[in-house]
Length: 266
Image (cartoon, rainbow, N blue to C red):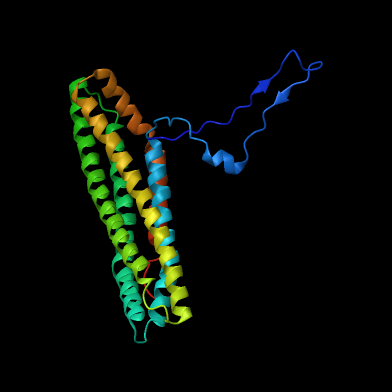
C-alpha cells in the first residue's frame, strides 16, 4: 500500500473585541510535538509496497551489520570463567550463527520477488489481444503466484522476528547475572543488547511490510474472483504502473548482496 502524508494546517482567530485588524495566529507545532500528532490516513498505492520492503530490508541489513562488531567484541571478552562470560559467549555465538544467514536470505528473497513481479508485469504488458476471460485467467494465475511468494516471505521474516525476540530476552536476563564481572565485559554486553534491539525493530518493520503486501494481494485476489471486467482492467494497469518501483527494489537488494556477506570478524 502506498504512503502519502498530509501537512499541518494553520488556524487564524479574530474577534470584534480586538483592536483594528489584530489577529492571533496559532503557532505551528514544534518538531517534537509534530511527531506526536497522528498521521493522516494513508493513500493506497501499489508502488509503496516495493518502497517499504526495500527500505525496511536495507534497515535490517544495516542494523545487523552494526551489531556484528559487538558480537565479535563480546566473543573476545567472554573467554574467562564465570556465569556471565559463559552466557555472553553463548549469546554471541548464537547470534553470529543464526541471524546473519537469515538476514542474507531476506535480501535474496526480496531480490527474487522483485524479479517475479517484473516478470509478471512484462507478461501482462505484451501487445497481445485478449478477451476479458483470457485476461481474467492470466491475472488470477499471476496474482496467485505473487500471493504465494509474499506468503512464503512473510513466514521467513516472522521466523526471524521470533528468533530475535527470544535472543533478546536471553540477553536481557543475562545482564542481571554476576554483578562482580569485569566492567568491560558488562559494557560490551549492554552495547550488544542495544544493537540487537535495533535489529529486532528492523526485523519487525520488514515483517510488517511483507504483511501489508500479502494482505493487499489477498484482497485483490478476492476482488478478482468476482469477475468484474472493470476491476480486471484496472488491476492490469495497476500492476504495470508499479514496475519502476519494483525495479528500484531489485537494484537496492542486489546492491545489498554485493556490499558484504555479513560474516567474519571485523
